[in-house]
Length: 191
Image (cartoon, rainbow, N blue to C red; front, side, top):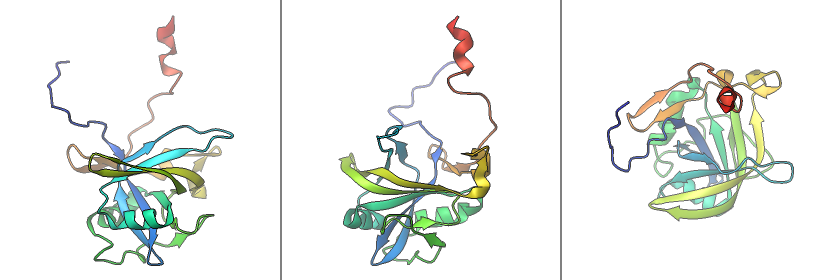
């Protein structure tokens, strides 16, 4: 392969499309975010942490700052239109609270979306500014998976059918096929 230099572009796409929820003025507000990251793997006595990153001017950020809680909801392909909508319309000018059926976990200000196959409620552990973005690092307090999205007792990505976001070409994608097993596929090269 011959490689072409593209500058300092971030080419980690596609990334997972999520809908972040927070409470503002006593109502849920939603924002699409594809800048979501896994901070650690957690464990028995170590919480799991994830990050979300967006410009501080977003309306949803106000609710996260005020209450220190948020949700990260993973919409399936069937919610693509609504997921896109909450990313292009601001809660400052439109009430998005009735767009989804919601439920609460253990946190009071992390509304979760019933229609999303996977959702997590988070408590803010840390907030940092990186460049022009506000990054919220959240401790996952509770994770929820729709019962129909399990296969052999574990969440099945194919059944979740997540939306992938490609910022380089501004497109949504869906999952491809299963191609191998991590930590096993490369073992043949060890010998």
